[in-house]
Length: 107
Image (tube, rainbow, N blue to C red; front, side, top):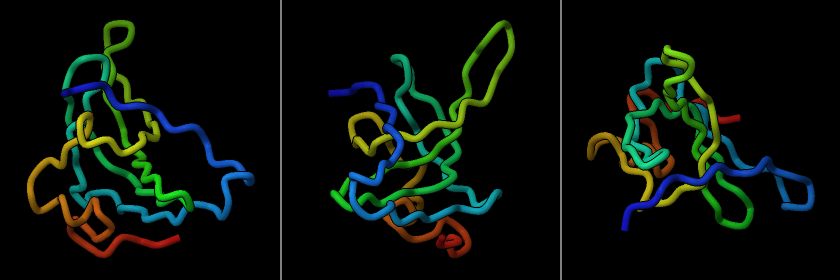
C-alpha cells in the first residue's frame, strides 16, 4: 500500500544519544523517490540519520510548486518503504549506509 512520507520531528536529548549522521556531498547522486501529497517525486538525499532507537531519517530536498514557481523544501523524513524508494538499484546500498559515488562525510 502506498502512503505519503512522514516528516520526522527534531531529535531531543531525551531520545538518547544524538543520531549518527552520514552526509552525502553535493553532486553525489544520492536520489530517491518520495511520495508526497499523493504524488511520487524525485528528491536529492542530503543526509541519513540513524537514531538510537533504530529509526532511520533521511534529509531530502523536496520540490514544491508554490505561488506559481518551483521551490526547494528541505525536510527530514522517517524511512518508510511504502513512501520512499531508491532512484536506482545502485543507490539502495548507499542509502543503507554506504555511499552513492564517493564515501559520505561522517559527522
